[in-house]
Image 1: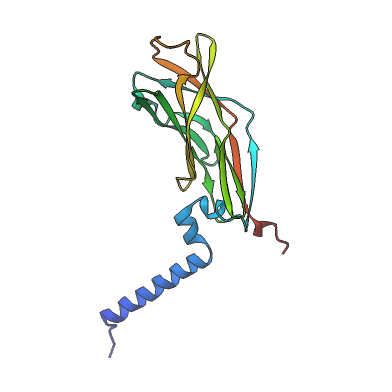
Image 2 (image 1 turned 90 degrees about the vertical axis):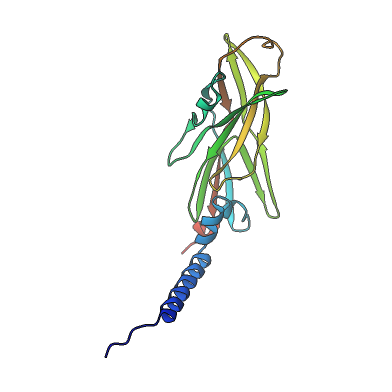
Length: 203
């Protein structure tokens, strides 16, 4: 006569298997990777090498000031394996004027991560610093006007960060002139690279 497993037995088995799977994921670091993304490596300087590679090129994107929503998603930088920098939003402030915010999107695995951004990270045991390296300017009638930075975040996304600039130039020469579209050029992007130290252990 066949015996049927009770509902309680099946439920208990499922719970045990689930907990066992979660433990294995935690033990091998996959849970932390899923939860933290790049920070899985970036916030572990004891076990991670970090280096940076500057980008010498300049990158330009056109910003439409008559339709701010239309700028979302415009690419500033397109790299390999999904590493991009694109326009996250363009905001209009009553006093500060227009602001463009860029979203840097990197990629990560269990033992490595790469993020091209305007922000350079400085990782030392016991500290986690960052510095905005990117510079930006707009061109209007063949003249270049430097822009002032507005923000540079930490790794607030699992796969990246954000940095921004006020579109009002530091000079007052453009005040009072109606401008519908501007080209924003960004330089000094930097590739942040994190590598698990286990990659360099001899086997």
